[in-house]
Image 1 (cartoon, helix red, strand yellow):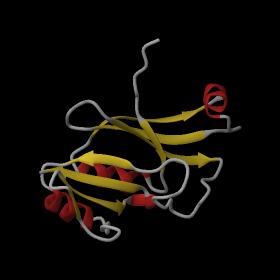
Image 2 (spheres, rainbow, N blue to C red):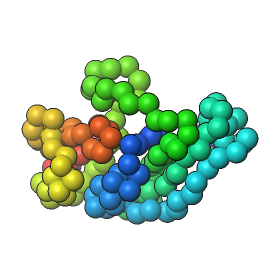
Image 3 (tube, rainbow, N blue to C red):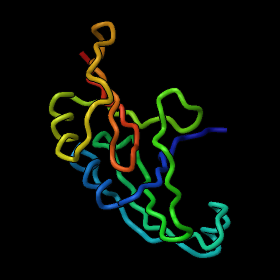
Image 4 (cartoon, helix red, strand yellow):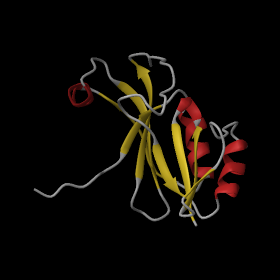
Amino acid sequence: MPIKLENVGIAVRDLEETIAFFTDLGLTVLGRDTVSGEWADTAVGLDGNHAKIAVLQTPDGNGQLELFEYLHPDAIETSPTLPNEIGMHRVAFSVDDIDQALEIAAKHGCHPLRGVANYQDVYKLTYLRGPSGILVMLAQNL
């Protein structure tokens, strides 16, 4: 059976803030919607599921993020994920210029967790916290 990755879904605190962050990094908004109803309850497994969503696409057309801001039930705040925790880990992006990407991220108050690393002179890479505490990896091929 063929299988294809459709997108990565991320629940966020503020949809507009998160869209601004990712569009500034170069993603484009493919669409927005508000979802609710029995089908949404069944698909997600939450009674009264009601959320604002946006789908963003990477410039190469291969990657998509689906962002959700829950209206009901209330979003549950959790501690931001650490790199060594089991579960959803991070979203990673290749960038042409990591310094330029970090300047854009800084405009949103997002900075590297520790710094920019050089991996065997193949990549410069870093992890940072995006909106809603999302772990984002940026990597520049050297």
